[in-house]
Image 1 (cartoon, one colour):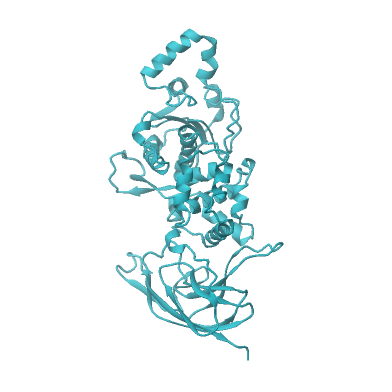
Image 2 (image 1 turned 180 degrees about the vertical axis):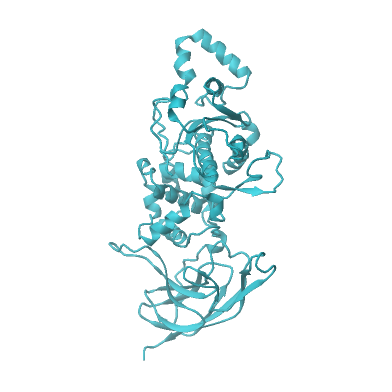
Length: 476
């Protein structure tokens, strides 16, 4: 499930680069012919596609062509597997990639990539389509606008891997990408993540086995859309094991480490937060439209608006709460310290947001009592269970459904835990109280946060909220 990261310094032989210097006159004639056929790449560093296509056909490989991708494969014909429609999927993704980098697709209408979907490596070597300089990749490898990928048992992961390598081809050639590994791999994961939407009308979509159209989902909505991907599950597992990487660790991940799933998951998560969190998205988009070179991380973290401590905490909060459909706009956190809780105070807790700052700070070891009142919408039952049935909850939650070990809709009160040097525990919110009423002892000298228990991807259809009275209580 992993792949070798591309080595941008590796030798890059191809048919034209090796053969042309040996026969200059014939070389220029061939170049003119290829230009006339619009087979010459737009950028000088791109690899010509026509000779590769010819080699694939001579070798008896199946060849499928779209506007921006020609795919050669030795995979046997299997009815309904949709291999022949992968170039059309690639074309739709190409438009999304252009939009992300603020490129005009019309200006790059002639851009093409050549991909090899491989079952038997030796067959491609014999055909001259797998050069010896290409490393022994596990799942995929890209060299400029040319890439290789091993066939996968899951159609969803096969599509994802195709698009992951496609993003590499796109960024290496159209954006001259030479960034640190976390961004190189993170943006490929981010822009490759997608789902197939059935029944959507799309002029660019040919009928396919998937019976639907490409939709970019950088943070997938449900696990079934990204079978075999496992990025969210990997981060959860690392967090449980107290091994989830900090943002600074991800920024410093060496290229060699991108042979394991954890490195890919971390790089994807870093790009996802920076691209979608409301406090980072605009600056990150501007950064991405500048040079994609080795100064990328330095320019990000060296900007006047960058707060390393806050970014680290935002990332830790995201990875601790990560789930399918994670809604950054409703989960962004106010980290302001709050005022000392010296007397009874009230706070409103919205049902459609994640962790919310109470505005009040308590001292470590102090006791606080609370009472919560109110009723709020917490979603609705699936239509196949009971159409149009709205679910409502009070502070104790509803046991009809549980999330992370607690009833859906239950009020949670927490403090942020920041481990000290040598502490192996992960940073994150520690719940100190829950339910409609009770008392608790503060774990730290810090602000109180509240929310109702709900998956972060399901907040949008909630409505209403709670009023929570907080009362400092002297010890008896």
